[in-house]
Length: 141
Image (cartoon, rainbow, N blue to C red):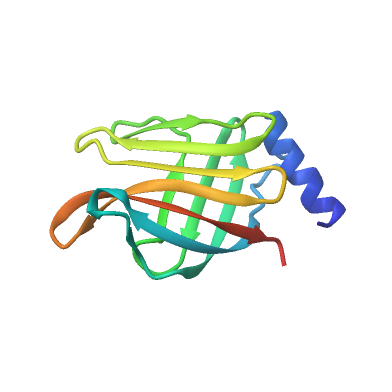
């Protein structure tokens, strides 16, 4: 991992944010595989996704770009529509987001050691709301 990447990740984990006036986007590429535990651990098609992470002040923003159902956006802001939480600690960076009206939740965690990705997202699968869990490994190149 490059020195710049390590410095950026450490600033996220320590809660310092980036020191520049505009948000810089940190990009990681990940191989993920999802399952739906409520449907007898139904395995979803594995995919390659790109994570775009930004830090603005004390808030984190994460966009997961990939095929459905792996594509979504979450952040740590609390608004009229969403309640966000920063779950970051010394071992991992984490974000959780809950839609206030319908209760849908999303969570993403990235371990500091090894850049292991895990989380969940409430999705619609065959006209039924279910929770998809996913995990994978990320790299910065």
